[in-house]
Structure formats: C-alpha cells, structure tokens
Length: 597
Image (cartoon, rainbow, N blue to C red; front, top):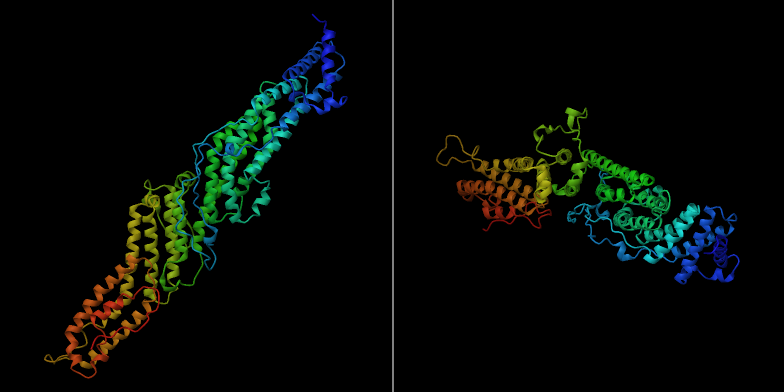
C-alpha cells in the first residue's frame, strides 16, 4: 500500500497536469469531453486531495483550489453545451386543446357612456368554456443523463470543498439563459408592469391568449423540468442546495411571467376587459395546484403567494367590472332616437354581453356573492329602478340576480329613450322591438334562460305584448273611429236616414289618416320577421273587417252621388296590400294603389 504522501503527490500531479493556467494543452482540452477513464482519474484525485484536507495531512490547499477552478470550468462547459431552448414539441402540452375564448372583438367595440355607438358587438361569437385543463405536470429531460451524471459528480466535489455558492452561481447563470431563451420562444416578453399597462387593449388581448398558453407550459413543463434537473444534480449535496439552485435559476423568469397577469389584474377597468380577465383568472386558478407543487419549498413561498394574490385581484377586477357595467348601462346617456324605432345598439350590446357572461357562469357564480344594489328602497337616487329580489330567494343564484338586474336597468334606460320620440306610436314600436329582442336573446341561450328562469321570461314576453297593444291603440283607434256609424244618420229620417255630407267627410278623414299612417309607418322598422308579420296580421284583423263592413253599409250612398272615386278611393284589397308595406324600414315607392273603377 502506497504511503499517504505518495497518494497525495500522485493526486496533485493529476490536478496540476490539467491546470489551465500553466498548460496550453490543458486550456485547449476539457476533461469531461474525453475518455471516461481520465474523468474518473481526475475525480479520484480531487477526492484524495479533499480527504487529505479533512485529515489535515495536506497543509497546502493550492492544488485543491486549482482543482475547484478546473471543475468550475468543466461544470460551466457541460451546462453551456446543453443550453438550447426546450424543444417545440416539449413546449406543447400532451393533452393541450385549443381554447375558444369568448371575447369582444375590438372591431365591434361599443363604449357605454358615449353619446354615439361606434359598432355593434358581434352576436355570432364562438361559445366558450373557460380556460380549464385536465393537464398536469409533465417533466422532460433538459440535459442527457450522462451529462447530468457528470454535473452531479462535479457538484458533489465542489460543494464538499466548500464551493457551494460558486457552483450555484455558475449553474444559475447558465440555466437562466436557457430558460430565458425558452420564454422568448413562448413569446413571453420582458415587460415591466408599467410597460404592459401602456399597451392598447387590442394588443393585450392577443398577448393574453399567448400568455395563457405560455404560462401553462412554463409551469407544467419548463419550470417543473428545471426543478427536476436541480434535484437530479444537487439533491442531498448540501442544505437545500437543489432548492437554492432552482430559485436562483427560476425566480427572475417566474417574476417576468407573472408580471403580465399582475399588470392586467390592476389595470383600468372597462366592460370589454371582463372576459379576458376571466380567462386569465380561470387559467391561473387552474394552475395553482401545479404552482404549489413546483414551488413547494419555503424559499419559493413568494412565488406561490404572488400567484394566489393575482388570482384574487383578477376576481376582484371581474366583480368591479360587472358592477361598473351595471352602472354604465343605467346611465348610458344617448338621447338621439334610433330611426324607425328599431333595436337600439345599447340593447344589442348589453344582451350580447350578458350572453357571454352566461358562458362564464361557473366561474362567476363562485366570484359573485353579493346581490345587486337596487332602487330607491336601497338608494336615495330616484333615477334607479326599484326592484325587490325577495321573490327570487332560493330560486336564482346571485349571478342570476345580477343578470336580471342588468335587464331591468336596460329596460329602464330604454323606457327613458322612448320618451324622446315625438310620435307615441313609434315609442311603443321601439319598446316592443327592444323588449322582444331581449326575450329572443334569453330564449336563444340555454345557459342564460336557465339562470333567468321562465317566470321572469314570461314577464318580459308580457311586456313586449303590452307595447304592441299600446301601439295599436295609439295608431288605429283614431283611424277606426272614422268607420263608426255615430253622427251619420239624420234624425227623424229613417227611410234614407244618412247624411251624405257627413259620410263624405268621414271617408275623406279615413283616407287621409290611413295614407299618413301608411306613408309614415312604412319607414318604421321591425327587424324580426315573425314579429313584423304578427303585428301586420293583428292590424289587418281589426282594420279590414271594419272597413269592409263600413263599405257594405254606406257604399251605395256615395256611389249614387257625384265623383264617388274621390271618397271611396280604396278597396279592402288595396288596404290589405298596403299593410304589407308597414315596418319595412324604407319609404314607399308610390302612393296607395287606387281601387279598380
């Protein structure tokens, strides 16, 4: 057996032969790129020097320092040879599915609160379930196994010699560069919270979609794999060495990743942001268990806390936006009546908005826990409608109460807008159109209908039917009044009994009124075909029999006199045809067709 001094001397010879500061050959070659035997020989030499230091048989530590410097270089070189960004197929989750996000298309944006509407919200959005996923952590090999083995061998000796800090610094600096490259490949930009908040919302919408996909991959693949690599190299080599190394590597990229979601959570609120905020909330909520798993250590607590706080702020932002949306709907100030009494852009916007809300009902039911503040009973503002929700207790969720309240305040606003029409009949058409649209939107969304409930839907149906009835009274009572018998009979003259002059005036009044109604109401618009036809039929059922009966009773009295065509201008068929012009939304091209002579 060789004496200790001889073994140490031999070990020193091995170390010094690879001293890059003393040998050009040592500078040009890397130990761990060569023969396995030479690698093991060098590691054994380091072990002998370390053993000698521990037993105090070696007083000069210069050889060990040279060894540590060499091992640090070897460690860095191995790491650098494997710093390529994670492969694209690894960045795609194995159970990834495309997310269809229900959102406001910026091209269709309407700003509530302005006096005019830029565009109508598209009503043909793709229905979305939120950003939920059954995917879980999927670790991949970032470095080949043989290289991991070599790195651990080096780390074990550096840490054993008291070079833990140097080892971690080298590792973190190299691996952080690799992580940064992967983040760039995932389109995660280095933006401060301030930079993010300066971006236009249209730009942010695109970035949010990318961020959600990137966050899922970062947490479940990239960060999880970095955690695993640290454990493979550093586990059990020192006090929380693997965790310290992981946090040195990942903390900056993790902050960079979460800064984006944090900036969105504290950004200025506006209605069109709600659905992207809910997408972010759902995606990050879904990731929380994985974040807890990847960042499970005490030193990672700040990352876990930040993620939870962002989710909380996103939830608060969603609640705040919904509340502000309610207020904006109530106080939307436009006063210019929409032409023809058609559906107001506000009605389309609000109903499309709450239809989208219903698509996120699972999330919002959890987030919305307070009832809406309603009416003079709860407020001193007389311009807020009064509504008692006690009848819905136990039957509707808090979210459903908010949706009902939005519809109530929408109608309240529309009722105020209807008063700007000078023609009362047109005001009724306006209300009929808009309430009917609300009913149809509720019926067209199973989720929305389920939340609103059939009882409230029946109330709404009754409201637009009342508006239709009020329209008919306002328009046709006066017209049909011309076709009454009263005032036409001459007292005491029962044989002939009819005042021809009064009868002629009655026909002239009817013709004039009907022509004016026809000219005016042809330009009014009922966009929904079935509703338009139903109202025309209802008009015809009242008008045509009354006119036919009046003609039958008094035609002979007019035709026996001079110029009967000046008084009996139209046949029943003429009126029937004229009614078909009503509510088409454009001027009639010609006068009413006169009856055949």
